[in-house]
Length: 564
Image (tube, rainbow, N blue to C red; front, side, top):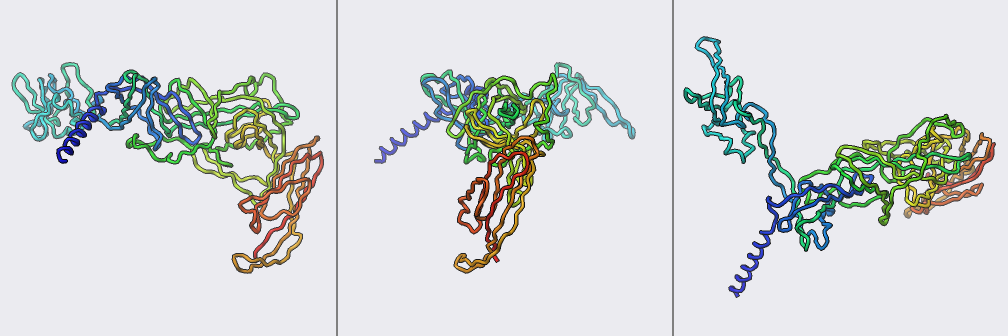
């Protein structure tokens, strides 16, 4: 039994030695992958595909152009048929470089052994006397412990340059009259009498990622590394040019600003992703990235409701007063164009090709310019209290813009007929060349409608009044105990004054805490499910109606429970 065990152990060790001999070494060939395809999200993350041609040795090749990937997202691949990547190895290795010398000691060490002319300063025999002497000859350097520092011997030890202390070094200068001991501190100047060396070797650490390829075409292959990385972001913005009198359509353009703080791109395919990706470990770096850190990029726009970049324009321009000056061009393009699009389950992608962008650069490009149905609408959202809308500033800091619930807004109703969802982004509205206003166009699914605020209304005015009609006492059991409430019935009046010469469409949304009892003018009522059984549920009333010139009143009543 013991003999069989030893034989088995010997076999395993032989196999392990064979396998170990196939592991990557520093002599393996390198390749230089570049970003060829990249899917960019709005939150500062991107899925990159870096590719490059590689000559392998025993199936191995390595690169120092390593991605800093999220945990579980880094993998290698090859485009060669009948070949596959079977292993990745991350390591840290020494990198030798040449850099300029930084002081006299390093300059002397770099040129040690050649003939040089030194001008040295000595103290004379008299007090305060200084004697200048010129010495010429080949020289060698002596370290403080008396050992010679021959540059040939330290060529493989670049760190020796950093250990030199100019005030503790001395030279042996072999002149015609003999050898002279010369402290470096006494040297006033030195002239190298042969072509000088002004560079020193330095030693740094670099990360390597080695890939092993197996298969019939493993010798000359195109290798790739895919990873989810941080450092690239796209920031969307819309331009909307309304047309018609009254407005019946609009030219909608989506512009993408690409911010690249990750790596150089050359003739790359870029996919701009619309949607909310879910990456559970996006803040954890893959072990294959060693001790790297994510590249930083500002958070600008997110797809949450009511959150994103806001650059509100407060100047209001009435659409009916716009005038076209001769020779001024439209703010949008005249033709129709749209980038190639793709669908990936809940995500949607716009494709652009041939993008070249260096690290640190930004660029903008138009993803589509299409004509969509559009109409005017005056919109009013009335809350019990003004609810601030949370936005993110360009540097990623949250700011609050209070919702103006005491006025109507001149708005645009937009129909999404583009075949793609609209991502949340700032939208700038125009009539011909004149800007009308800017607000946030929130996420709109394909085929859906959305209302974009343009500017506060000046020709349609609203007033909202609430009066208490009755109050009665009521006892109710709450958590096993009797509690007395005042049941308050409230009657509210919404008054609309239309000073325009033609009818206008009005959309009113009333958000309140309480139970709606009745409402006029066909208003619809719904409750929020999470609070539908509460004493005072979240209730929502909606009216969409046409108001002719003059005044219009809308009434509704509701009750609330007030605990005593």
